[in-house]
Length: 184
View (tube, rainbow, N blue to C red):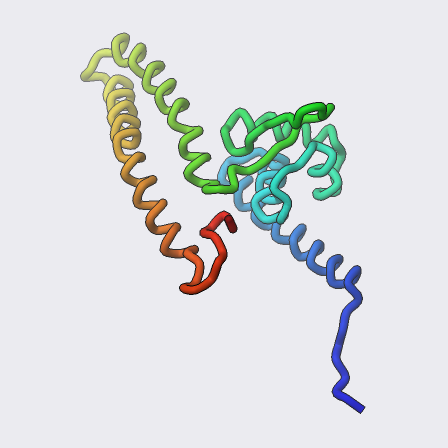
């Protein structure tokens, strides 16, 4: 007789993987929640980040997270408004599709935040004009403005450095025909 091999049926293996995925999602969502994220958007983002699919309907997300579609509605609205998920509609489809920017998730998310920083600066400018420069509030507003201007100026170079770093980390092995980090 040959060696006995412990072979799990595919359904059991998939169920075990699915349980592990959902445990990770809950743990990572808790970390995001502790950082101030609302709970359900944190769960949806963690799921989309870790799951293999590239696009989801609200029903897909509800099924994947084992929650009601109503719980998903507010979460995807929050995430799309924050620039963490993209929202699309396939031609002829009756429902929206949500996706991560899979080519470079973090560059896309960072790019989505730049207009928000500009709006903050525009809002701060009004407060800076209203408050005395020697007041505590005036100093904090000017410092916040300076920080945002600094970040906006540094982000393009930071993103170029991130792109180079990312390419080094995820470059295909020499001689392989695989693509870079996005699997292309």
